[in-house]
Image (cartoon, rainbow, N blue to C red; front, side, top):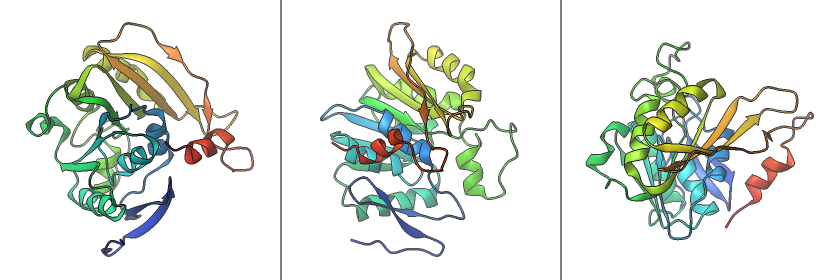
Length: 247
């Protein structure tokens, strides 16, 4: 069932079993980092997951195809993005598995039970407030800069929502890695696996994926680096496999 579009919106085919997503390019469109995070997260059959800062719900949608999770919750503070997410979930007939909340991550415990999720994922704003030139577009500013919630707020919320030994999976910039690990350990989320993502061979990593375990023991494993593009601009075989791999 196609959804009614508002001015400036479009419907994009994103793959993964024919999933479709409503986006508004002048505000924000998802990137490869969301796809990588959705692939990086592992959710057991019948498990529960929550995505903090879900935007238009691209990560919950992909998780619905890549995992057998029973319940996936997306949390988004921006009203317009939340509305597009709702319509995308309905359009893909996934309202029985994906629930969306229009709320600040700092207020989540008023709506979700503590320690009730197996996995928390997040693709939060990458830039500290005042740490980079801010976008003029309010939607892009909130999505890319820590204007409403800080990195610590996302990590604190993850710890409170996770069951004991639950997993927190995060995608971010390598330049924030020290802050990320500091806050994860502060909130008892022990880093377990890390993967650096490079645009192509010979280029520095510009994305980092981190998996933490709540109350886990101290042991960090470095995964093989992931390269997104070949020299000719085509996706590498590793990225192609991510788009092809479903449950």
